Image (cartoon, rainbow, N blue to C red; front, side, top):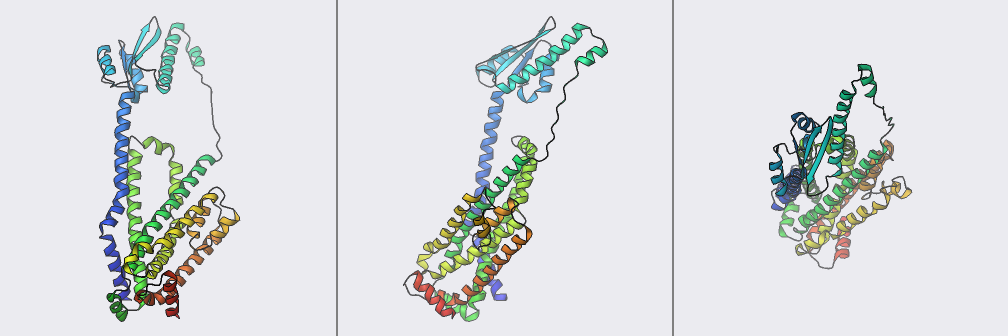
Length: 407
């Protein structure tokens, strides 16, 4: 058992110390950071250019507008001359001149283009409020009359269930899950196959198999690759948690998160728990298949070709989910949710859409675990014969020889 863990540790350390793994880990964060930086700079630049200056000889008019619409106003411009210069250099979208003549509030906007509809609506709302106050003062109404005029209509919503956002959360969860599984499978199918194929037919394998069993060596290899995958997932989970908490307070994204917190929580919930377990077990199954593919190539130089069978199967399972993303209760989706290799995609699809009960989930997991155990044991038994053979008769000949050695 100790020798198996030595193989596991060596495989794990060799992979995580490689530059390819470090780049694989850092690339999403680098591109994400660049994207967020560009977005933030663009948003801030656009935000400044979309703001307006507010000018008024009456401080109360200007202060009242800024208090209600502080995000729309470039506060540092307080005179017409300064605002004209800022408009000419395109630092602001324009300037708004507010005035009060005979208890009638007036506003004149100066700009190169029409005022955008959102800002225009806020200007009109503010003018209406101020004008209403002036009208009440001019009318000299009693307290009761003024109160009666200020009575507002009442509007309520009785929402039983936010079905729309739930459906969006399910759709997002589905795509994040299947794309994540697909990328991990494609990446580590190649890594595993090349890891195994690079040792094909070497003298060192004869020495290794003389000191430990092929099954232990094979399982150690698989566990080493699996630990690398778990490490990558943990780094992404931690990084995602940090980014999520930053995004909740960042000026560029905080409003979006505040408005859609329930939907975001639903997506996060769908990605973890039993769905993450299906992801990991699916990766283990494909890793075992990739190891078999790597052992079946004729020589170490064919390592680049080794991953093709498992990659093709991963593509087939990935694209087969598309027709069922809106129909998880289809008989085909139900059947495939129990079929190994396919179940890592289809059962999470059903779980996300609440189309599978605990018994069905448990049965699918049991089938998946049994398949992993049987494949690992069976391939491990013929692993020595596959790795030591040096003939160049091709894939099927190698498989036949391996099966014969297993007997």
